[in-house]
Image (cartoon, rainbow, N blue to C red):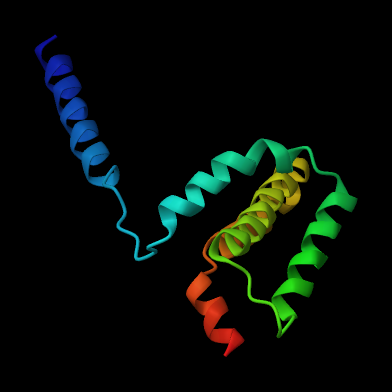
Length: 123
């Protein structure tokens, strides 16, 4: 009985220390992360209701505006487009389980886009 208690205590301590070390918060270099997460929460349900045509319209509209040399998107407009595309990528992964990994990578890529990089590309 004493051996079982010792083993249980050992595993409990092991669990506590591993959850503390793996549960550490990651520090991000992205100054706009809070803004992006706010937009993500705002648009997640809306974008999940999109069909393929709605997404195509959003996607092409973004690239037309991004490539228009006479137009510069505001920070909110830029992140609204990129976060909506990231949300749709996530939806795509939920719909097609065999492509979930690629969809999550695409979501991360769109979510990590930077407004400063966009502005630098306009120069």
